[in-house]
Length: 151
Image (cartoon, rainbow, N blue to C red; front, side):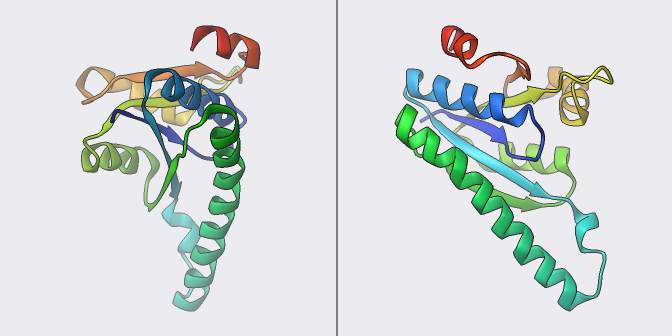
């Protein structure tokens, strides 16, 4: 089964990327894999504190994921999976793509900020020609109705 990989973070544009991935998966018989990455700078503390912070970060991610997962199950009939990795964002995305041969499309949300589409979109689009799968960049300000129309 082809899976859509979508990155879960605290960005506003993440919502449209999640919606798009779920709608495309539902209409194409695919699946959704949600990837959340904990950056290493969150754990530059003593070992005991770092372990506690890691556990809290994972708990926050799981709660955040469950909101999207419930919507995907209830509205799209998709049961997404969650993968949590630790490290630098772009290398971890590439590792996940490499580790899971069922991933067929990376779905990213683009920021509406005047500074650009966001760091992940910017970094990955520079190397888009050598990536092993296509990237779909979803504009952050698309309406739910427009997303439904184009998926």
